[in-house]
Length: 482
Image (cartoon, rainbow, N blue to C red; front, side, top):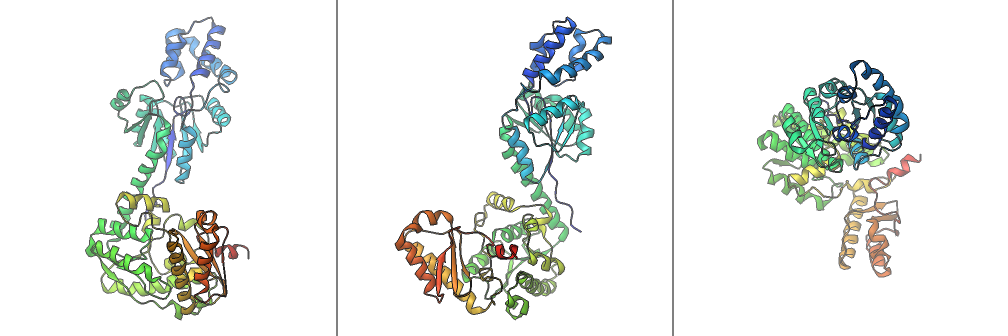
């Protein structure tokens, strides 16, 4: 059983963290003072918002008058404070950054909950849960209950709440506390504004997920990585070597007609550079009727063949598990029969288990200096053959030659396609390239003709350029219409 991926639940203070409460608070306090006949020092009171209202009013009212004054303040607040209070710069983007990582947002504030909710609703803040009328260390209970791992605030009392909850304290300098005061209170991070939060969160989440990946790999003990040479399996292989050492890691690449020849040497060179044993067994997915038939389940038969080939090789070497490079995005991408086939045969998915997305994979690879950090997706040649058309070695070889011809034609014009697919639709070929090339260089009739001729030269009767450009898994669109 793999451990759960680290969750992303971020708590935010409200006043002077997400919203600029000063104008509304000042207007409400002046209205209250006018009713009570008390000249509150509004300027000094709004200079350090954060403490509960009873503490702020205590020096100016008799003890028995504080409770009724608070009740009246909350009533007046609705009319005087909701509309004039703006959102602070970066607030919406900070909340969106949490959502982008699949996380939840929680507001934990000392403000009266009903009024806090009015602010959230009026400003359209994307908040999953709001907890009001809690202050200082009292915020810890709500943060723990909601499973928060980060709390963002502007006041030393927000730091106290985060530290009491055992979560990461992130402070912004948009309230009345200085950097020095916040650091002295024990905050872990100080940001100038919430504008800086998304970049910080990206790095923080990546750190958490890489730590979870390390923990997962340590638990496995040894792995044979089903290694394609792509960004996902390359990161997994590198992480396994970092964590377990090269003597407990093996790379396994299945060689068959569906693996482009251009991918083989770079993959082997990368694995060899890590000091691991590289296995290149011949796989025979073409012998499986379900694979050749090329229904929507084709990838199931391919992955079944691969795992059933690599499993015995791992056993012979005393390797505990076969691992694939499936990431967290793959698991929610819809139609992925290959993932099911691997799971049924006991393959493990450390990247998925750690919650690493495709973006995480690329960012981690870049951080580690891996050459695959920006490598385009390179699906197998069979993915180019339209569903329902039999997969044969001849068709795969023809597609491979067609793509090589297109690249050569583009190179002759001084161009390069980052993403390129020649789709075999029978005797017609559909060419997908980067959309930017279609509107620019390939609008030129000479270059366009050379590209089409390169595909016709390998045996297709008809060839055309897809006006929508490259789309990963575009042949799946036909399945979704069935």
